[in-house]
Image (cartoon, rainbow, N blue to C red; front, side):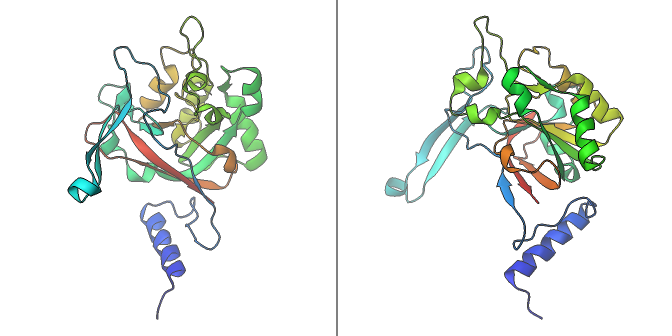
Length: 263
C-alpha cells in the first residue's frame, strides 16, 4: 500500500503527538485542512530590544564566506540570548532553574489559549492580563486545556518596525507596554495546569515592572515564557495548538525560537 505525501505527513504528525502523550489535546497537523501561522518575527540587527547597560547591540551578522570568493555562503552571528522572538528558561531568574536544553519536549508542543486585551491596551499601555480575563475566556470556551500555553495578544507587534515605539520609554527612562499580572500567573500555576506563557511585547511583565515579579513567579514553578511574538491577530482565541522551538544550547537562559501555531 502506497501513502500519498499528504497522508504520510498526517500519519507522521499523529505519531509525534501520540508519542508526546498529548494526542487528545493537540489535533495532528493535516496539510489538507490545517491553518499554519508563523508567530515569529524575522530577526535582524534592527529588531528592538530591552536596553541593557554597556550593551550596544543585541544581534550582529557578519559574512565569513561568499559564493564568489569561497564557493559557499555563510555568516557569523553574535547575539544575546534574549533577542527577537525568543524563549526564556526558568534559570533566567531562578537559581538552579531549568536551562533551555533541559526543558521537556512535551511542554513545547501544547494547546494554545489566546487572551485578547488589545482593546484595553488602546486606553492603557501598561495594562495587564488579569485573572478576570482568563475566567471570561473560560465562560466562552470552557476550561482551558491541560498543559496549555497562555498567550497575550495586545496588538503591540505592530510597533516592531519602530524600535522607539516598541520599547516605549518615557522621559524618565521607564518602559511602557502590557504584560501579565503576577496575580494571573499565580492563578494559572495553582488553579490551572499550564506549560508556559507568551506575549507580543518585550517582556511578560508590564514595562514599568522593573523587578519582574511575573517572571520570578512563573520560573519558580519551572515554566517557560516566550516574548516578542508576532501575528497573534491571525490566531483564534480557542482551538489552536503551538510549537515553541528554541535553539537548544546547553546551559542557556534563553534562545531565539521559531514559534508556529496551527488549527
